[in-house]
Length: 116
Image (cartoon, rainbow, N blue to C red; front, side):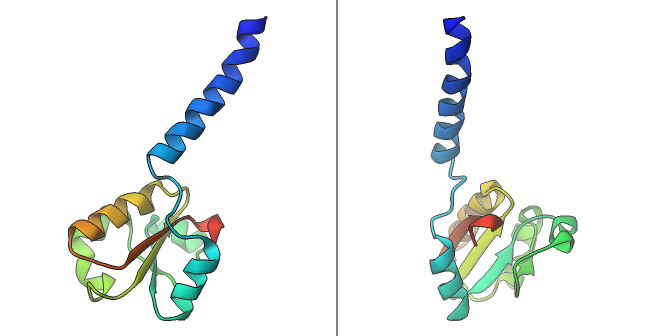
């Protein structure tokens, strides 16, 4: 009985640790992301077109992470500020990494849309 009582808390700790380790949280909070966008940063939703159609943040451009490499020209100038988001933060973390690898210098990752 005692072992079973430890399994769920241990699994939650492991999941929480993996969540933090693999960058599912953004590197910018909602207040800072809103300020960046108000000051001219491009807001990019990297979810699927279907998810985007179901609802998105005002003013967001939809560039699914799977098409991002082919759509670098749609992102904007490499020196312009960008704020990314998705559903959980996993895809926006991948997108942020990809953009930085391609020379985009002011990339911020909000993570999940709910953080807005």
